[in-house]
Image (cartoon, rainbow, N blue to C red; front, side, top):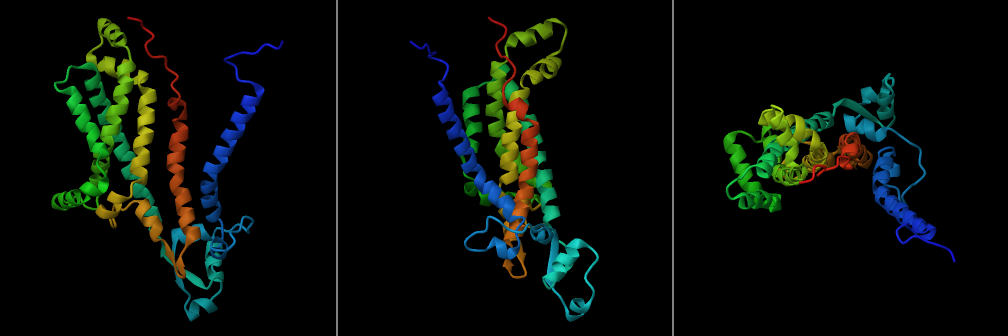
Amino acid sequence: MSSYSITEPSRRQKWIAAILVVTYAVITMLPLLWIISTGFKSSSDAIAYPPKVAFQPSLEGYVNLFTTQTLQTPEQAEAPPPDTWYGKLVHEKGLAIVGPSRFGERFTNSVIIGFGSTFLSVFLGTLAAYAFSRYRVPLKDDLLFFILSTRMMPPIAVAIPIFLMFRSLGLSDTHLGMILLYTAVNLSLSVWLLKGFMDEIPREYEEAALIDGYTRFQAFTKVVLPQAATGIAATAIFCLIFAWNEYAFAVLLTSGAAQTAPPFIPTIIGVAGQDWPAVAAGATLFLMPVMVFTILLRKHLLRGITFGAVRK
């Protein structure tokens, strides 16, 4: 009689689990891979039917993304091709570069607003979560529910009042206005996530620090914050994802100086209409900062700290 373990999965179960995981990974990665590949297609290959899987790679989409182009004049058509490789690429299509596009500015706005609001959300959320976790706050449950309820409100429900308020305060189409707005929206998520992590940190750690002569602030910064690093990292990722991808408020409250990349990318139009390689190239570059940020903090997402080590 062969022996088996009721806890250790069998070889067959491991193979089935592996096949399911690989299948799910392939299905979820296909749209992303298709967007990335479209960014390296020519305009004709991008709209070809049936869709082309094998194609000649081209940087046409990235050149169109970062430059503004127009039809060549007769003088430009007769002139020698430009010296740069991207100038030659544009010249071969009968076009001429008239200047840089605004994608760089919009991308910079996304970085400023996204990371600025994420920092404020995590900073204020950490302080509020620590207060709710450690102190006796009057009507604490009601306050926490009120904070959470602000997250349940759809953006379109408050878009018009916020637009009128921003216009009165002079915050429309400004970095400060968008940072404050995204911070207010993300703060509820930040407080609730971080409070859960704070509750799991034993109070005995702080009590021991206070006995050793630390002040309350020193105990918070040197004892609690390192223990809550995993929660802070996870919260920062969720806050950044919302601020980075937000579309409704960005469309309504920005149009130029503070416009972010999400409302700008769909408006990329070439000389002949919608430039899908440029749109795909912009979407690919737009994914990179969040992906890099998540990879850098990935070790904190898996809780490596044992909470509750001190038994009461």
